[in-house]
Length: 116
Image (cartoon, rainbow, N blue to C red; front, top):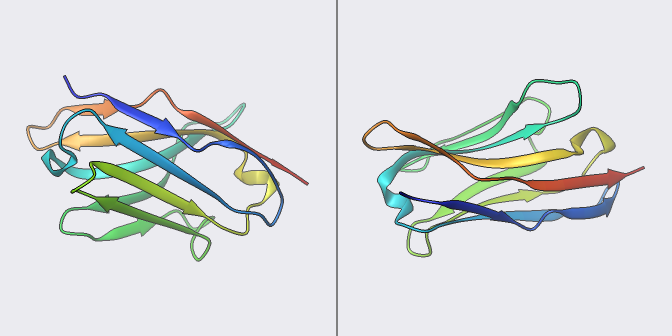
């Protein structure tokens, strides 16, 4: 059973930056797709960014040009670089992966709070 553990969340002022990391207990090369989702009060969990292997990325329109998703298979780590943060980026961010055998895996999440 692979575990995904997020880190890097916190409180930041609007306009600032944060980098989220997701570390896998196993090899992330076994995940054909990895994503970052976020949930906010009163809203459905939304897909923020996805990356496939070999790398092909997609982003929600709301974060294009500000967020960058990346994966390092040698370190079994997924990252999300978040720049020019806005108050509407506040939420709980989750790491998600779809295993080569089809099973989805979720981390427990990390809180990001952007103060205006």
